[in-house]
Length: 122
Image 1 (tube, rainbow, N blue to C red):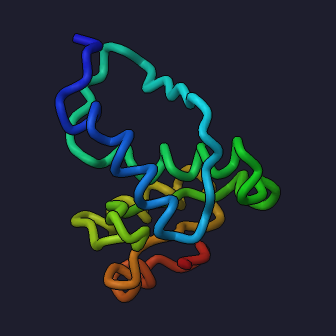
Image 2 (image 1 turned 30 degrees about the vertical axis):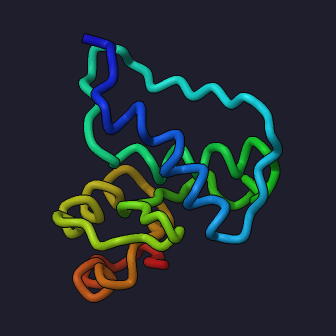
């Protein structure tokens, strides 16, 4: 059950390429990413963005300060851009309930997300 599907195994190269194409440089070192809990099935490219953000924070390429109440939503493209996702409105509603202060989303989702007041949409 905890074994990843092919797209998760391939995320290594997708994430590395997206980070590089975004202007960041990764040192040639081994990076281990734990996709816990094991009982939740992981499939598709949906983990690429959180993996990339985690790597950039852990390598201090971006600062974690100020991101405590922030979530990142979107599909990470190979050029490093965020691509539109479906269901952004319910995601924003739930984020507000959880006292999330800021959501970083694809530009194409901005109009729909802006319906929710009291949360910064970036």
